[in-house]
Image 1 (cartoon, rainbow, N blue to C red):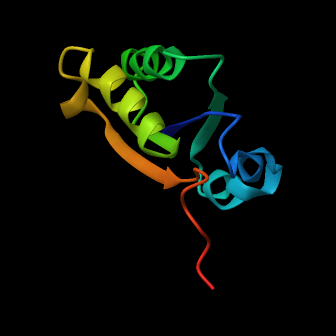
Image 2: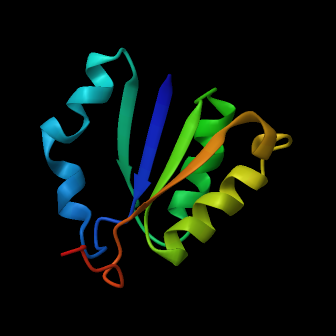
Length: 100
């Protein structure tokens, strides 16, 4: 499975995505994981659309509601995009508190 994780590097918990071993279990099962940071406003939408056109299986929005909105709209801009890929959410914004 080809997975693209899109995130805002300025988001609250984005540092967790930079740890190399976080995705080791996925790699061990043969999945290809790409972690892609945003370069600025509107960038995640363009990257999500590019990922759909590139044939990924899963696009993950890692962040909060703004990140999810931008990624979802990017997927939807591609004809048939919503039917072609799965969308995941990794809640990593400053508004999400870890469980005790």
